[in-house]
Image (tube, rainbow, N blue to C red; front, side, top):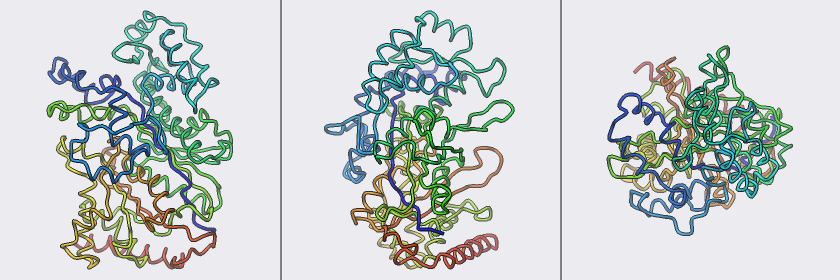
Amino acid sequence: MGDYAVLKGAAYTLAAAQDMVLRSGTTQTTEQTVNPDSEYLKELPGHLRSFEEITGYIPNQVYIGNLESQVLRELELPWCEKKAEKAERRGKFGEILEQDQFLGLIQICDAFDLVKLEKSFAAETKKKLEAHPLIGAEKASVLDKNEDDGEAIRKLVEEEHAEGLYHQGELVGAVKRAHDVDTNLSAHVMLENLVTKASSVLSLLNLLAVTGEEAAEIEYVIDCCEEACGDMNQRGGGNFAKAAAEVAGLTGATGSDMRGFCAGPAHALLAAASLVRAGTFKKVVVTAGGCTAKLGMNGKDHVKKGLPILEDVIAGFAVLITENDGESPVIRNDVTGRHMVGTGSSPQAVIGSLVTAPLDQAGLKITDVDRYAPELQNPDITKPAGAGDVPEANYKMIAALGVKRGDLERTAIADFVEKHGMMGWAPTQGHIPSGVPYLGFAREEIMSGKVQRAMIIGKGSLFLGRMTNLFDGVSFLLEKNQGKSGEEEGALDESRVRSLIGEAMREFAQGLLEK
């Protein structure tokens, strides 16, 4: 077994999707079906933000790396009433893309001629995409094929079961169904999947720019989004990973999809690190696009409280895992927490299995981890909806277990939350907030010496699929690189660690069952 794999870089992207809020978010589409004349639907358009407002939203600037997450602690909620100074659409980790350009990118990602754009809209959008530093003229040339006028597009939507594409309230395109009777290839599902693919492609392109890696050198791609592509004979068969890699130009890569609801990214990152450490592949990318269904998910509560619709962007990310370069943070895949079948679903049991159990057997205290990155949900979105501050709740539970273990005093809980935790800044798109948004900052903080050790925690709600009532989760440590040694300085013997963690997990589960 070779050196630990390392975190080489991370990219984050947002695509404005204000019009998709109205027509693709499940809260809105359900309301249109159940109560089409509701006051909410009438008021909703007046609560949509402009692209400038989306770009100036401080959590969005944090997401793409233009602001440090610590700035959020200095601001009172609601954050949406404030604007970032000198807000930029591009940051050190990625970018925020305008809605019209995103619609053009969706057509670039369409391999079966399902996307039609109104010809004048396509011409204007092509100019913008040609000027985009990561997309350019070659990819944008796909938009030359559009010959339909507005009437032809309208006919597709009204008579041929196509899903409309809108910009600033105007119908500018359509996504056709891919099969006459297969619901898995309906226009609605094809739009969902193309949005996911396009946002993943955008993140992959930004990852290559952030890391400086050659596209052809990436060997494997793992997609961990929450969507599924397939047909009636193999629903969810995939493969988003290879589909996005194709458009992004990763000609030397193969790949596959990995699903785990919100915990999916943590599972995928562990798999990537293990593949690299085993020597199977040298460079693996973990990527995920966002989903249209969760646009405006908490819109009713936001409108009721006079707030703008804050869930108005499609998020994506991409992370590069490589062989040890002697500098980048190492992924300690031998110190791994896991929510087992016998763990249970109480918050204490979940955090115990993901945090304290692996730390115990690695000989570490809770306070030995400088930063914890669990569900980094944006409280500006969740608190008005009655879900509270999700990251803060996680940190308080970790601190409470630390008190129980004797790692810190009860009076130190508040200090622990501030020192070891972070305010959330990620869009509420399930898999997006689950630990991953911190990776870009984590790499910088560990390499600068500000942080020595961080824990990434993914948690998921498997019961949503109606196949099991189980909860889920995995976690792992990021640590400062001690150089290419095979035996990182300060690390426990690997076989001993694996044995101890396995024993601890079994004892933990048995203790819960006995209770």
